[in-house]
Structures are given as C-alpha cells and as structure tokens.
Amino acid sequence: MEPEKNLKPVNIVELRAMRSRGEKIASLTCYDASFALVQDRAGVDFILIGDSLGMVLHGGNTTTPVTVSDIVYHARCVAPHLKRAFLVADLPFLSYATLDRALDSSQRLMQEGGAKMVKLEGGREQASIVEYLAVRGVPVCAHLGLQPQFVHKMGAFKVQGRDEAAAEAMLHDAHVLVEAGADLLLLECIPSELGRRITEASPVPVIGIGAGPAVDGQILVMHDILHISPMVTLGRTPRFVKNFMAGALDIESAFRAYVAEVKSGAYPAPAHCF
Image 1: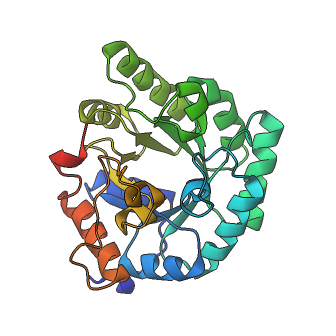
Image 2: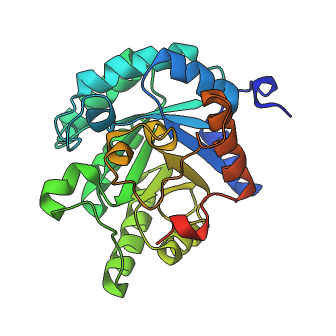
C-alpha cells in the first residue's frame, strides 16, 4: 500500500502493534511545515521535534542552549500538517530538572506545540520524573545511551555501553524507566548486541539511532540523511548515518527510500553499526 493511502493516524497503540507484528518503525526529526508534509506523505511513522535543531538549524555545537519555547515553536510548525505520523517532542536541557518543571514543560509541548509524547534523556535517576508525568497522562519516551544534553558531563559524543558493567547498568535503567511508565525507549550510539538485549527484554517499542538492526525501529536526523547537516558537510559524519539523497530524484524520494530500507531491514547495514 502506498504510504499516502494509509492515513490512519499512528498512536502508541499502533506503535506497539507494529512491534508485535514485526514491522519496523521508521522515524525522522522534523522542524517545519514543508518537511512535515513531505515526511508524512512518504510514510514516516513518527516524527521527532528534536533539540538537534540547536545544531542543524541554529548552528550550535551542542543542544544545551535549546529552550522549551524553541521546541514549542517548531512543534507548532509541524503538528498541523501531519495526517498520519505520531509527533514526539524533546524536553530540552534542564526543562525537566524538577517534577514541577517537567510537568510545566510537558504541558507546553503538548498544549501549545501539539506534541503527543515527550522525550527526556537519562537513566534510572529520571524514574521519578517519568512516573510523575505518566500518571498525569503524559506519554514519555526515555532516551538512553549517548545523551547529547549531557555532553559536557560525558566529555564527548562517544559510544556508550561498551563494557559489560555499563551494558548491565543500561539494561537495568531501561527496566526501571519502563516500570516507571515510559511508553517508548530510544537508544543512541550503543553496540548492536546491547541494542538487541535491551529490545528483547523490553515490553515497549525500542527505537535506535546507532543501536544496531535488532531494535524495533530507527530514527535519524533529517538533515543528516539529506547530507546537508553541519556534521556531514564538515566531514564528521556519524557512523550510523547514511546519505539517502545519493541517487534520489528529490527529497521525498530520499525519505521514501529511508522508510523502505528501515522497513525491509536493509538499513542499518553492518557498516552503520557499532
């Protein structure tokens, strides 16, 4: 079936159903109306208003300067133009540092921005935040592995969970966060084997970015797959990124190629994995 004919809106129940039937979930970041229309038409299952906008739109070196108002603005640009794709929005740096701040930030993202889920970074230490939001009706995606908002603490953008102790800690974090109420897990820059172990142990869908092929779906930064982000143009393309504009007739064709390769399992190939 052509993606544009399948206009039933994707929601949390459908994402779980996709996982159950073994259908891979294809996700991308998006920040404006024009790209939202094209991604939705191309069959992208869920769209993330990522704080990556601080790097690909604002030109910064990190995501930490991004504010809740920035995310709300871009979510409002995207949300009205999605007929099918599920909209997730990042809670930016320190916007969920306390229970009240997390709730206020989530309220803005959902009420003003039109998001249907919020995403936050961090492990078991965020369990109380996840639970506080979940019991109040806020769907939460928990982000483990490389956490860009913590780059100043981590020291660099690097692969996480390489040794067994770190892997076991991440497995435990995933369990604690799901028990607290997380509806989705996102794993960034971890070994493929760890991605497989977390996915097999998780009762909720697991999305990967540089987490190997065994997860339930993939997400990439839109500007990266179009080969126009600062990272790729400066020659620092992350290992997990593939240029889908190569050989594509236009941007929509590139998005369709990405969705098709995620669905078929062709992406990520071994060359894109750790």
